Amino acid sequence: MNITSKLPNLGTTIFSVMSALANETGAINLSQGFPNYECDPKLLDLVTQYMKKGMNQYAQMPGVPVLCQQLAKKINSLYVAEFNPATEITICPGATEAIFSAIMAFVHPGEEVIVIEPAYDCYVPSIELAGGKPVPYALRAPDWKVDWAELGKLISPKTRMIIINTPHNPLGTILDESDILALQKLVSGTDIIVLSDEVYEHLVLEKGATHCSVMRYPELRKRSLSVFSFGKTLHATGWKLGYIVGDERLMREFRKVHQFNVFSANTPMQYAIADYLEDPSVYNSLPDFFAQKRDFFLDLIKDSPFKCRPSQGTYFQVADYSAISDEADTDFAIRMTKEFGVAVIPISSFYSNKLDNKVIRFCFAKTEETLLAAAERISKINVSVR
Ligand code: PMP
Ligand code: GLN
Image (tube, rainbow, N blue to C red; front, side):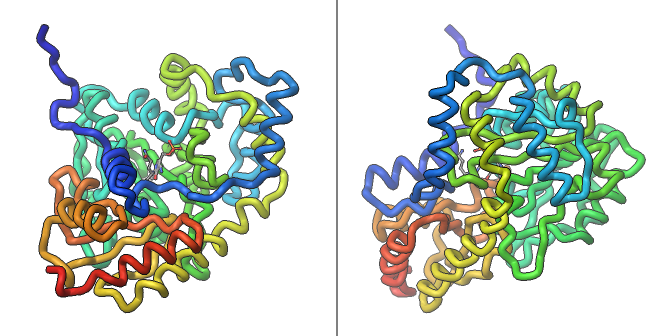
């Protein structure tokens, strides 16, 4: 039997590969992004209550109405943007599904999607499965800034979509208002849709900075779909729950795909989250919580040869290891895991041309105990290991 792969050049995602290697070798896992501490027991109690109350059958296809209403309220208070909870918000089993279904819904075969790289790893395969053509725009160390005029040169009559991600995984950078205004100017008057990955909206760690959502800007609001993940906001990545927000005309098309991709997301957690989000401090406390972890970790490794600029957002920290080794980042990440006992992610895996900037990513969403143990191992890495 001949099998013709739809994704012939794709292997297993780097997150699975590095987590498996960490488990195999007993390394401290700072690779795949997930917290190693529990989420709020109050939230667990709410889920249990709703399960016991019998909320265990299919949710409505677009999501449980009370949760969509709660999210509409939250979005309005944070971003001064009105979205109709019945027609403009859809609850999804993770941001990954939202991204996949959005790309499937809008990208026709032969159309182009501009992807800013390094890019979260599900974007490009989803575009390819839709028959679209990823058009990469490469960010470069050490500033990782988007030059919007340069990016604009990639726009062609075939451009259907631009994907942005702020705060950015893996870089930990954020887009500011001037970035979003430049993007708005580029797409204004075109048929380009912006897919805005905002799963780290509550993890803006830079002092004085705020999350710049496309939802705030009228010209972008009508042509954008914004994607969110409860995994990040509630310290519960394993629940695989998120949502997508966008203008009704876009959402109608999105739901045509979503309904046959997954139909709906799990019911009791949707009810529980709707109640839990009544208290805004659950997400408003996140910047301080994660900034403290970032600073704790950076302070511990400040005398190591890794060069770090403090992350502006997310729970990731990138580090330049060029003072330690000139190995390829994939080899260095494997050596860090096997020899030094700390698993990390090589940034080249987020570039379609595997561009190697000699940079790796740490996840600091860990207990202080884990960060201390990891830092102790990291401190043993010095220039003599070249
Ligand atoms: N986008 C980015 C930038 C992410 O980092 C992640 C997951 N960590 C996702 C999307 C997917 O989120 P989920 O786990 O909710 O599918
Ligand atoms: N988003 C997580 C990360 O960046 C991983 C998610 C996954 O494993 N698919 O590490």
